[in-house]
Length: 216
Image 1 (cartoon, rainbow, N blue to C red):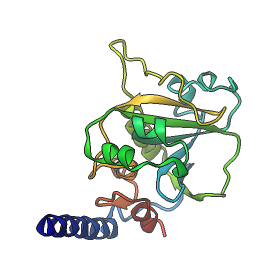
Image 2 (tube, rainbow, N blue to C red; image 1 turned 180 degrees about the vertical axis):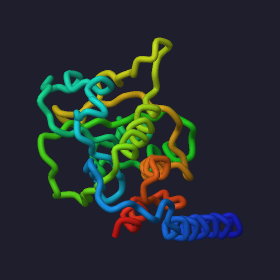
Image 3 (cartoon, helix red, strand yellow; image 1 turned 90 degrees about the vertical axis):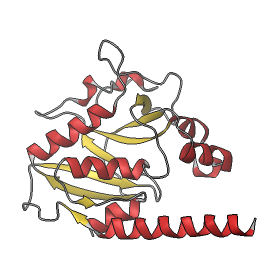
Image 4 (spheres, rainbow, N blue to C red; image 1 turned 90 degrees about the horizontal axis):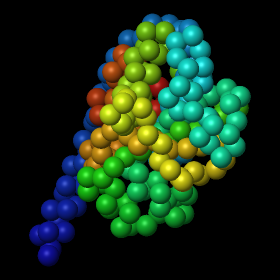
C-alpha cells in the first residue's frame, strides 16, 4: 500500500511538472500587432472558455448554436461563449459547490461523452478573469472552424442539442466530439484551438493558468 501511494504521489508530481513546463513553453510566440477582431478568453478560476461576437461578416454563430434554444428564446444577443467539457460533469456540477469526487474521478479517468456549453451575452463582464485578444480575420476563421469541428453532428451534418440542460435562461448545451481525460481537459481544448489558429498558446496545459500565462 505504501509503494502504491508513493507511486501515485510520484505520478501526480510528474504531471504537475509536465503542466508547468508545457505551460511555460510558448507556441506561435511572434504575433502581428493589432487585429481586426476582438475575442475574449474567460476563466472562472478553473475552466477557460472563448467569447466571440455572435455575428459578423465571417460567421453567424446562431446558425450553429441557435439562441432560441435557450430558455429566454431571445435572438438579440451581442456575444456567444463556448466552453468544452465532460457532459456528465456539466449535468451534476452546475456550481463548484456541487462538485463530488466520484463525478470528477469519472470525468478525468473514464471515456465519456463531452459537451459544448454555449452562453449568450449582452455585454462583456469582467467579474471573472477576462482577457481581450485582438486577432486577424484569418486567425478568427481558423479558430471558428476549430469550434465548429468540436460539435458532434448527426448523419445529416446538424449539431445536436443536449435536451433539458441549462444553467440559466441564456445558455444551452450541445453534444461534442472527443472525451475529456487527464491529459485533455477543458483548458487543453481552448489551448488547442488557439494553437491551431496560429495564436499564442502553450505547448500543453491542463490548467487555465497556462493559457493566461502566455498572455500576461
